[in-house]
Image (cartoon, rainbow, N blue to C red; front, side, top):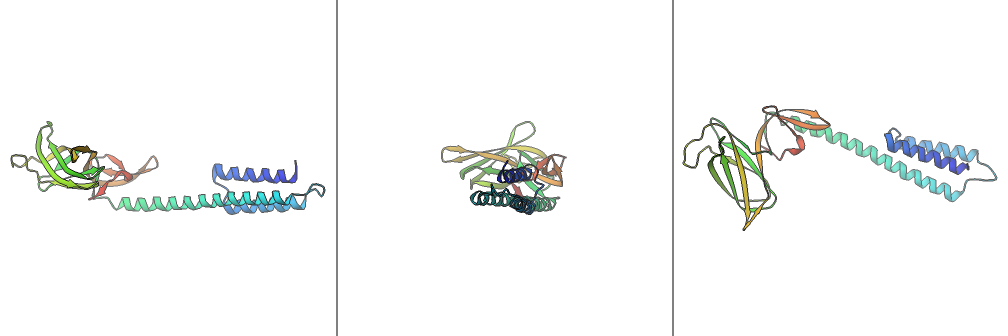
Amino acid sequence: MTALSTLTGHIDAAASVSRNNGVTTAKELNDRFLRLLIAQMNNQDPLNPLDNAQVTSQMAQINTVTGINGLNETVAKLIEQFARLESLQAAQLTGRSVLVQGNALALPDDGNAIGGIELALAADRVTVEIRDAAGQVVRELQLGRRDAGVSRFDWDGKTASGAQAAAGTYTFTVKAMSGNHEIGATALAARRVEGVRHGGGVLQLVLAGGATVAYGDVRQIL
């Protein structure tokens, strides 16, 4: 095996270690290459010296590997910082309500029930049908025009006849129209956040009642 081949083998091995387990840092990889290069030059065969063009190519290769490794280190640090910031932001949601995917509508003893909708496109007309536990429609809300994205609505607890509905949990469906075409609409439920935890590598919010939802699935903070 020539001196250059030996050097190339060491470079490839070092790069492989860096890719596979991330132990070798950019500086360590660069230092290792320089030590190997100096050792090979000091011990090269005078009858078969290192070729300048090939050495230059190897130096370019190690610079590329070092640069990639350095970039990986930077990205890893950014991800770690982002995770810490996300945890801090999530912790501040404790005691507040958020909109997440769901069609439950909780009517308190006094006050309004809050729900939300998420539209794929802007809608000319948005209709919300509120149903009781038996599936009967108790109220139809005409929300009018709504822009694309997430928005909330309030139900004052009045039925279609004007009577006060009993406190409790209702369900609702959303229908959105743009001209004569129905567009995608997702029902969003207002849920109170009781705590934060990590599960399966994902930051989760613990909701009232014990259910959990990924922090990234929160559509809006109320």
